[in-house]
Length: 209
Image (cartoon, rainbow, N blue to C red; front, side, top):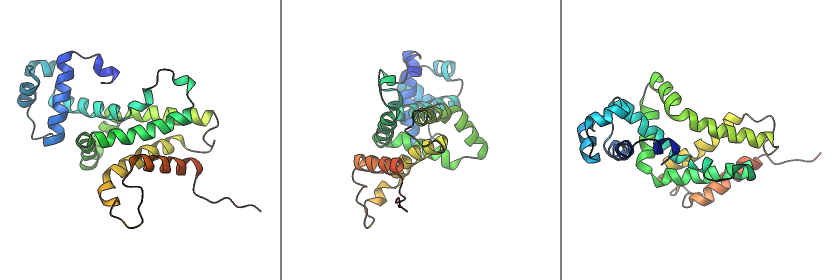
């Protein structure tokens, strides 16, 4: 669990775990608060005390899954001693691993992103993804400040590409491995290394005059 969840009571943490499993397997509408309370062994009143509503609980579940997928941003004790470029690579590799390790939760987030309105998208951005994405942007900006990233690169765009490349691999890997000429789909590690190298070095061949 992330730091924020450690600050919750044991009952609240268990409620989050049960709710995540049920929401991911059945969808938001098919899961009742009664079912969550019963499986978690807590009262509905306890759930409402911590999360106010079913929607509030669902948003907390999404935020927990998002933080877990980006846990590599904070996994080292002495971050100042590690190159931000190395930390970017660690995040990129670990983020993909987390997506693949928790496919149901990852799909739950994706469904929310694809199936909801502009207003809902604003809520997801502000309440679920903002903190994690800001941390990725901050890491890229640190690498840029230390000269590892070109000064004219948009750090938010690079952060988006790091996250997006992993999400797209997760979404398409079942098809990719059957595509002609594709040699990277069977190995997430190979994919991570190759894509990060491509982003770091660029693809345009340098020419001398």
